[in-house]
Image 1: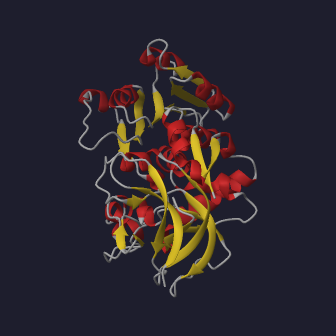
Image 2: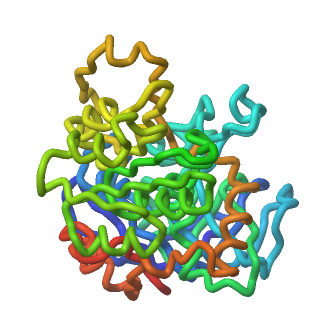
Image 3: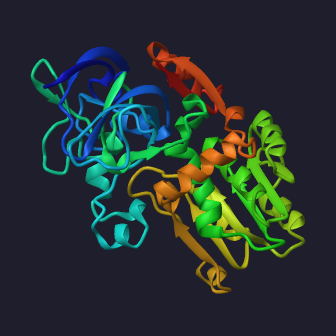
Length: 368
C-alpha cells in the first residue's frame, strides 16, 4: 500500500523546488521507510536541479538524509523500526569493487544513485497523481517528510547524537574526510593543502587535524571561511585573491611542495595549481566536479617525480565502517560539524538554496 507524504519536487531543469504531496511505494524486501528528521543540501542536488545531469524530472532529490526508521522490508536485517539512521549512497553489493570494500566505485553507481531515478529493476519509488516521478536519488530521495530508502543506503547510528548534526555525513563530510584518511593517509610530519573551504574542504581540514600531518594549509577567497578553517585545525591559511598562490605555497612548504593536496572547487585552473604545488611522490585528490567533458592541461614532465592525481567519489568510503566512526567523533566533540551547519525549516528550502549559492551558509540542513 502506498503512502502519501510531502516532498520538494523539481518540475524541470532550472525550476525551483515546489512542496507538494507525492505517493511513496510500499517498501520492497530490501528497503525501509524512514521518517526524515533532517537532510543536508549539497551542490550535487543543485547541479541536478539545474538540469546539468540527465536525472529524470519532475523528481525528488536529496541525498544527505537522517531520520528514524518506521518500517522495514521483509529481507532487511541491519535496522529495525525505531532505529536512528544516516542515509548515504547505495550500491549493488555484488560487483568486484563492492566486494573489495569500495562501494563508491560500484559498477552500477551512476544509475543506482545519480541518473537512474528508479530502482535497479526499473520500478518507480515515487509517484504523483498516478504518474511516476524521478526518485531513488542516492537510494533515498530525502527531500521529503518520509523517504523510501534502499537497504545499502542505511547506516544505523547512535541515538544520543542529534540527527540534525549528522545529516551531512552522508555525502559532503565523508567525502572530505575520506580524501584525507582513505587516499592521502598522511604520515608523520606531512603537509596537506586543502583548496576550497566549503563543507567538503573544511571536513578535509578537520580530518587532517586528526592525522599525523603537522602542516595543514587551507586556501580560499573568503576571509571568514579561512578564519573558520584556522579554528578547525588549519595551521596556515592562504587567501587566493591576495598574491600568487604558487609562490605562497612554495614558501609555506620550504620549497619542497605538498605531500597531499585536496582539490574541492571544481575549477580546473585551481586543479592545475594543486598539481603544480605537489612535492615528489605527492598526491592530488580531485574532489570538485566541473561539468562533464571538462579537461585540464598538465605538465607531463612535472608528474614524473612520482606525483599522483587521483579522482575521488564520496571519500572512497565503506559507509558502515566510516560513518559510525565519524558519529563517535562528533559525539566526543572532536569533529565539530555544528560549526559548518545552518538549519532551515523544510518549507524554506529555496531560501537555503539561495544562501548556499551566495556563500552565506556553508552547509544548509533542512529540518522536519
